[in-house]
Length: 141
Image (cartoon, rainbow, N blue to C red; front, side, top):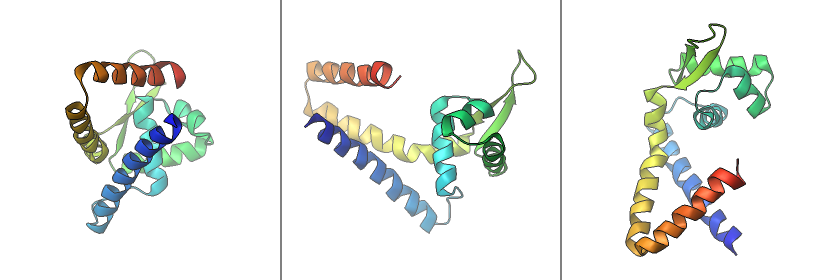
């Protein structure tokens, strides 16, 4: 039962994101392919990964990952930033261009959370936050 409820929430967030992305495609604003969108999601979630960390997580060959990264750099969605400690290492950082793109789903999250805050007591919200933190920190480490 809880699995179904969580899946419903997850699917609705995804569907909202996809609908907004399709709107951008209609307006010819979107320049990311579907695979590039997934790559960006991974890079953003990993928070400044190296190309190696990205390729290992995405299960891509080094050359395939490098090609994807180079395309994303060329399109202006990520930058390679050299490590100050070890000049051989480069981190992948998302640009403001991607953050604007990503905000499609983040704005919706704010709307949903405002609605949730109106429907539940402060105590219930504390419990909900605790459950979400456990899911994030312990169950999906």
